[in-house]
Length: 106
Image (cartoon, rainbow, N blue to C red):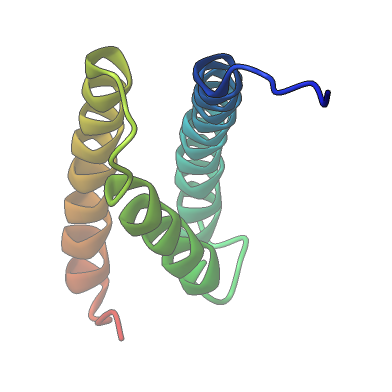
């Protein structure tokens, strides 16, 4: 007779692994927002010749991918919405600053 593990236990373990992975991704997004802010500050102070558009595109893609996740808890959804709001405010600030410098984002 073969051992047949309880599928509920298996799914519970998978859900906890997904939650841990999602927590890591949310932490990564928070770090990426902080790094992108620093990169734009460096650009606006004249120490970099090009704005960090590639890093911005990667962050936006990551935000879109995580936003489509259906397995988030309410706390994770709240944390994500807070990070998205923070990024949106920085993005608007960067857009206004670039416009004031006479540049446009592509």
